Length: 121
Image 1 (tube, rainbow, N blue to C red):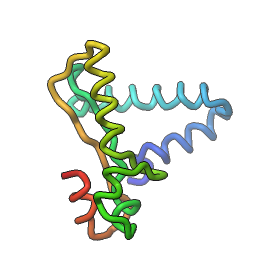
Image 2 (tube, rainbow, N blue to C red):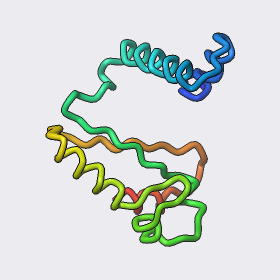
Image 3 (tube, one colour):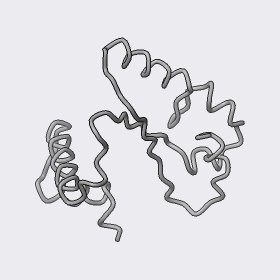
Image 4 (tube, helix red, strand yellow):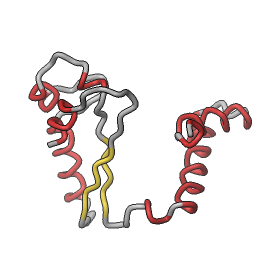
């Protein structure tokens, strides 16, 4: 089960191939992603979908800052709403069209994730 996780697969394959440079690691990551896409094409978003990763979980759930703080201030792991507004503006200005936005996040600790859910909402 743990090997199914992307970081673990990257770590194992990086050690096996002796990849050292960021370019080699990026090539390996792309290779792994293509393999996974071929195995599970139903999980690949359409070309008209923008995928946005939101860092949630322990960085929000175990932090004393208000949710509003996360929405207006850049932190080590999270970005404020203005960051995503800028991406939207750049996308529109570049004539990139999309029909859907897919938010991706995940949790690796068993915590009460109410704060993360509030951040996403």
